[in-house]
Amino acid sequence: MNSDKQVTATRLSRSISYGGVLAVGCLLGSLLLNIPTAQADTQAPPVDLTALAKEIGTNGAHMGQSIPAQPSSQISSRLAAPQAATATSTWTAPGVQGLDVSGYQPNVNWATQYSMGARFAYVKATEGINFTSSSFSSQYTGSYNAGMIRGAYHFALPSASTAVAQADYFVNNGGGWSSDGRTMPPLLDIEYNPYTSLGNSCYNMSASALVSWIRDFSSRVQVRTGRLPMIYTTTDWWKTCTGNSGAFSNQPLHIAAYNNVGPAPLPNGWSTYSVWQYSATGPFDGDSNAWNGSYDNLKKFAAAANAVPTTPTGPSIKSPGDVVAADSSGVLWDYPATGTTSVGSRKKIGTGWLGVRSLNVIDWNADGTLDIVAQWTSGKVNVYLGASVGGFSAGPVLASSGWSRNQLTIGYWLTASNYPQVLSREPSGTLRLWRASGKGFASSSQVGQGWTGLNTTMVDFDSDGNQDLLAQSSNGTLRLYRSNGAGNFISETRKIVGSGWNSMTSISVSSDFAGKGSLGLIARARDGKLYYYPVLGSYRWGPRTLFGSGWGPYVIAGGEKIN
Image (cartoon, rainbow, N blue to C red; front, side, top):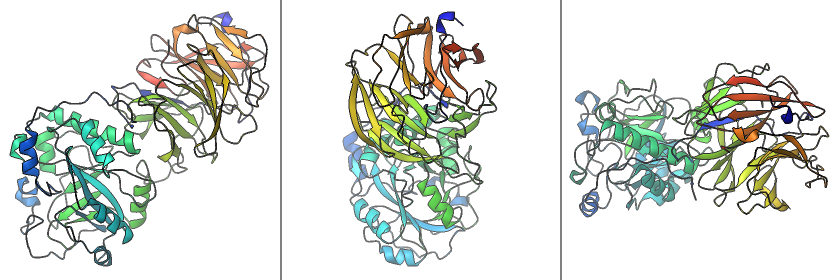
């Protein structure tokens, strides 16, 4: 390492930002809103929207619209459209009972459905980009008031518009999600094309185009809501129109198969299902469904941003030294720190992490579990709260928009605070301190000007127990800005503590990576190699360690792509 890059730093056990290195694949832009820039979207062929509107009519399509296109072994002999009068089935599938409804069932007696055993409901909200169900509000509220866990679904018309446009339309018109334990994840209903104006049964789209459309819709919904959607489909449609893709095994499956035997075989990629739609003829109004598990598990599933692990294994990010990364498909991985400047075998801890500008791993609410603060290219900043049993739930939104060009560094800038703070470098060069309350921001104040073009990293560099800033300029010089621990900088000549740092494309602080109590910087070189620079105290760097390569496409938590 260049001798000019020698500098001191130690820390108190809590005084630095939890620097678990979180990397997220730099993807073509969309994940979770006002809203992040969307991923490059699969464009559908032009369609006659006037003709389509006539075909959609008053109530549009509904879940199960495509069941007649399935093999007869999966169809109930009493199948009928929702508006037809049919004999009512009394058989129920194993599991917790539920139902799904649309505009074809405008007068559901929800108390009766609950008394019959229904504990959850899906309600049609939208279709394409121009249809909203007139019954949605009353059905969504009615099911909730009856005591059910309820959610909204969108009937996809992939060739009518882009995936992002339909995802936004869905979320803007009822397709949201809350971690209140009473809201099912948003549901994507993807099945055979019911309209002649949209072409063939696969919407005149290739299997690869449909897979891309489903992926982009799912990513956008997660960007907007904090939750990947459940996918409703049939095995036959999936095989026919997606080429039996196995790319969505990380999302819950709502499988349609009308029989009293079971939903097997399942589409490729899923070894089990979350919900089985087993009948269109009762016993419940609309279509009858069953959750594959206990009622307690259903409630946990509804409340969790990610599915609750079958066997709790502890938080998803166990150590602030862990390296966490998302691959090019948006899967989030945790690489556990070994304590010897290396990482162990990775484990998957999340999906859908697309369209992010920067990430920070820190205990935002001071509950002892590491959380994630995400800044999106849309300008939104929000928190994902880590659960002690694994997974994350949607936390506070710190900024709904306007932060797309801000550079953030997060840590305990106020030494006496129990909660971390955010230092935000605004496009104007103003440096602003945002004080957290454990939920959102409590207040803010300006702490500096003239910071344009400086890349900042928060760390206790002089070992006095207070956080400081390292500022890297465009010529590679690294300067130390010491703080007094009360929110302000110490007035003094700024020490140059390094040079040549403009060769690094990401710089972030990391604790415990080289063992308990250790402190250092993790930096990515232009060739994608990842180095650990130990900060030993007394203005000394230890020998750097190369511990990874191929990191060029990633965003590293605690920093962002720079230089």
